[in-house]
Figure (tube, rainbow, N blue to C red):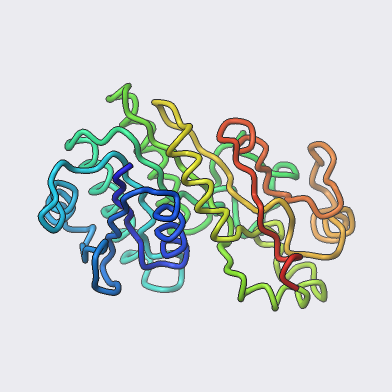
Length: 281
């Protein structure tokens, strides 16, 4: 496939660009900043004209793209002001979705976020493990935008029944060099309770994107994307009893199994996380 990849200079985007190219896809990275060279175009996604121009033809190539992978965003609260985060992220996503639809692209995979599940869980989740079955609970401006992006996607596929948009609710993205710090998390169960002790290796994030590009049918769907395990050596039973003692349990927690359920992604996308911090520490 010929793929437009926004946010290609980010932590996840750099891994996704590498992995998709290794799988044989023609990837054009797009970001507001990045290393100049073949396969990269500097684009301000909040400028609709730039997005349309980039999607129409890049460096002398014409014919557009088969798919768009949209990862670009201010990646969290606290980096810029709330209004700047809201404006950048919602406008950039609208421009990308709208340009893709107008230009005939019928496959979009994009980064939603685990934050729509109710992070940082200062209010208890409805049950553990959490999944995609309960309504979004945004608790920040960044998360609110992610929720609104999902609502935008729902309406666009209603207007265009042949359009496929897949929202991947990525957990906290990690690279192998990040794993040296993981053993220290055991000292305080509350230090990482904010996302139920979850994470995702960037390589498995790229795998989820490729699976969605291959398998997602027309329409909209959302998937939690996390590693198969938690960041903790301590057992789930111990962690939940200490931090979330009143929360109902939804099935067997396993010893260190992810508490961000990936059952739906496994079932519908054939997602199979292969990387664990335990293999590096």
